[in-house]
Amino acid sequence: MNTAAIESIAQSMYEGNAIPYLGPGVLSLGGTCDQLPGSHSALVGHLTAKSSVPYKIRTNLTAAAQFIENFKHRKTVSRAMTEAFGAESQPTELHKLFMGIPRLPLVVHAWYDDLPQKALRGRASWGMVQGVSQAEHYGNWVHYFDAEGTQATAGATEKPGPWKTLLYQPLGSVWPANNFLVSDSDFVEVLTEIDIQTPIPESVQRLRKGRNFLFLGCRFSTQLERLFARQIIKRSSEKHWAVLPEEPTRNEVRFLAKYNIERIAMPLEEFVRIFQQKQVVNLAA
Image 1 (cartoon, rainbow, N blue to C red):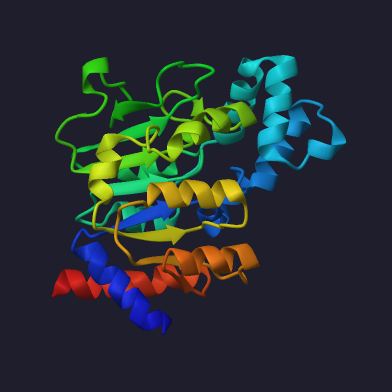
Image 2: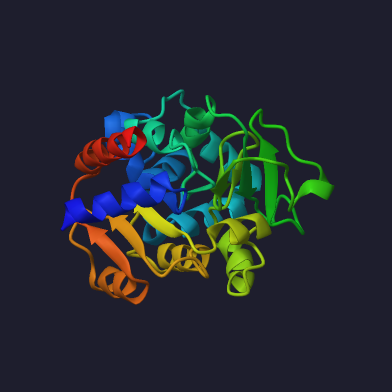
């Protein structure tokens, strides 16, 4: 069953009809987790190692970030996030493989590192759109940047230019401007509007229409993870896939079924190896 699904994914990717959706679990490949936080628990551990927070929220990323923001200023949160993701690290084989797909209109990257940007640097005509915090950029939901990291002008916020590939980072990213949505208040602002799609860029809404999503390194065990995924794939195709080697929780099972997301039950390393073989066949055809 997995082989047939991967063949369908590879064909959809080759035709430019599938969108990679990368989560923090992607960093588990190639030992990257040794350099960058590759999970919510690893990241909150980094934040709480720098600032003392109450015991009951020490494992809750958004609550811990909010406590630090309230009592030690937003700049302390931003500085800690920048330190957490500032290590010099290289893209994994998964990043290189998917960022090298010839027809790649849109990539969603729901974590804070800059490895997709690094993997895209050999590609012609690409740019970024990143979520920004209302605490730091009141009145703005996103900022656009070109491949060199230069922010687009205000008049170009929804028409950034003739980019062939758009990298969408709804939570922000360490590069190029250290934008992070991480605290409770960051997400409250977004969640009050996300159901009517206001925080999701028009360019993303346009590019997702009729396309499939492939979730890689993602879990849907928390309400926040499920909500972001649901709103980002809204009005796209009716068929999606998720590489999920771990046994899903009951909430995840319900989520996958409700949104017709087929589970690929294999390790990411194995999926990458098989997908690469299928992709080579498509390119040679």
